[in-house]
Image 1: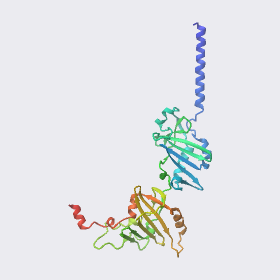
Image 2: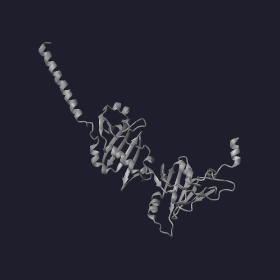
Image 3: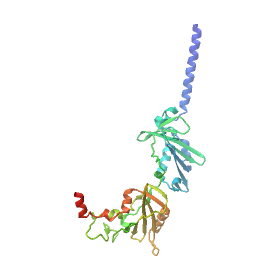
Image 4: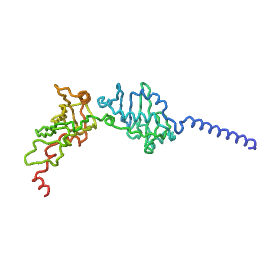
Length: 339
């Protein structure tokens, strides 16, 4: 091979290498740079989003917009937590590229951005739909406290983004958790009635009284401590749900009735099954008196009517106290314990 031929081959190789570099540079230029929005087209449609679908390990949760609010169809169209929805949608619309990561599908699982269609997958897909248009982002592993790996569904390119939203994996975790919030200073009296007839009654003379007084304490017994009834009187304060279902009739529930100083009655029935403690709530307004906050109570009654709520055990325990829970142990019991 003469020198002219070698020079020609060298020239051809150089041209090919230059062409490859130009092609690679062109491909890189098509990728969003650091600081760019990952999903700019979704930001333009953010106000029109009316359905969100979350898929993780093959399981799917759907949240839909109905009127001015959001609901969880799997929970009987119960109202959803708007703050959680807003946080996830903002994470998608505001996601900014920190840096590009692998475009090799074989490496997606390492970042947690593999397709979430099976039980073995690690990614969590959030599909936000505006009418017929859907924007889907697969969130992967947390990289730092405020960053996460992500991939637009249908695109092999993965990214490190500057967002790390909380994406609940159970339908109940997307619910609006507020049930009722009645401060104990609004409660005048409480009665707990068990199916076997055991009953505890307590109350206050005035709204400013510090403690609830327990009535009809068994002869020769005393309260375990002076303020033991205050927990019962405050059981409706900041009462939240863990889950919800359409109300069903319960066999032999405990009935706990609260009466406010403006004569509103809140009747709570408590039952227990394998899933936990469930309550139903009936709110009864006085028929012959128009109270100042009647609209507040009517709104609450409309919201809780027809539903049964699973609540935290510590709240349920307050609602179904027995004498043994609030009285000091009898001397015989104490001696037996010492032995």
